[in-house]
Image (cartoon, rainbow, N blue to C red; front, side, top):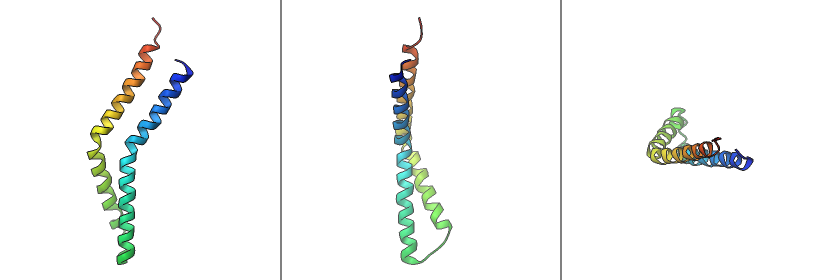
Length: 90
């Protein structure tokens, strides 16, 4: 396996991780900002109010993005498998 192959595998791994982790992180951030704004406007300082909506939004986003996640992991696994098979000695 050449140095270029290793760099490509690592780069694709980082891109795959960002694609998989991006939607739940964005959902959690947007929900957290919305809850913080709601708390600031109403002066309701309930601790569970910050966790429950974020947890629900992140869980829902993960469930909705499962096909995308499966596709990305499958594509990455086939890339790595192709590199391994192509570089095996005969």
